[in-house]
Image (cartoon, helix red, strand yellow):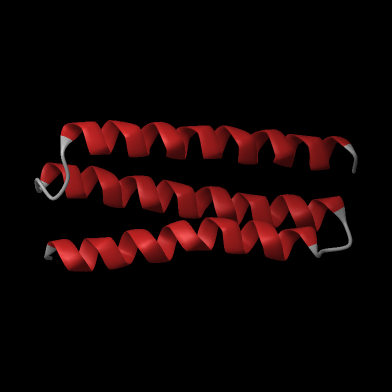
Length: 90
């Protein structure tokens, strides 16, 4: 796989994070909202996996990788916090 293919995969999986959060907020029950946050978290993990492979293939620098990973980890923590909130209100 070449660099542009990984760029496309990263764009697709990262946009899916926000898309699933947005779709989940329109749901009526907190359980449904939490479900879409789980899907969003999975998209974040997919994005992280693409970043790891990209770094291993030298498509990105160590600095770019670390900065991106830190952002993904922060997003994951926020998703988990929101999911816990919704589930506590169920």
